[in-house]
Image (tube, one colour):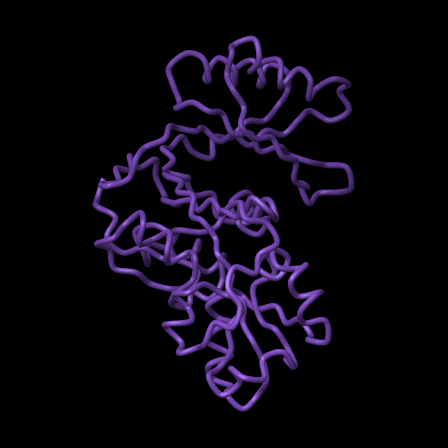
Length: 284
């Protein structure tokens, strides 16, 4: 398997995604993309060796765009995961450092806006909210519109990159704000990261239940329970084929082995479930 030297991420420069890339691949060449789908497409089309995209936030939950695109459009393998602490700051152009309390608009990614809802409601109630593709894109926009009394919610890297002034730090509503980022690759690549502590392994499955079968979800969970396979996450997502049709994403706190997980999958398939392995990977 070739080395992962060129890494795609959700840009522009100074996003939390780039921070995750620097953590995973400090010596790599990085290439930014405007959207999560375009970043994932780049990995599928060999424009980059791998893609790093956000998967889940402790406050706002799963990044549905990432999950849905992996399931319905580009079925890449998850080969690694890193958790990055998220600190959101309110920043403005230096021209408006003294009058930032009279903001016209606040720009940021929808997840960042939601993470700072209480602050925005209490401190900037008159400011309109504008969603953009990333926190860094918000910072870039503010830097390019110095004449307007607008602000961005982004990280400290973005403030430095785009020459903005942080007027309020740590404006997220909850202190325990972290985001899981995953490395996506076309094949089941064995990811080794120097300098990071490997905290364990996960295996992520997509499971579609048989239609109109009572107790199917209970049977699915039982297949893992009696084998003492610990599940750290179970989430339903719409199949997009009609109301009431869902698939489930399940994280197992164990690396793919030769017996337990394969036998659990075989039991589920015998029950009429469809099972797909999205990845078995280390997390850091």
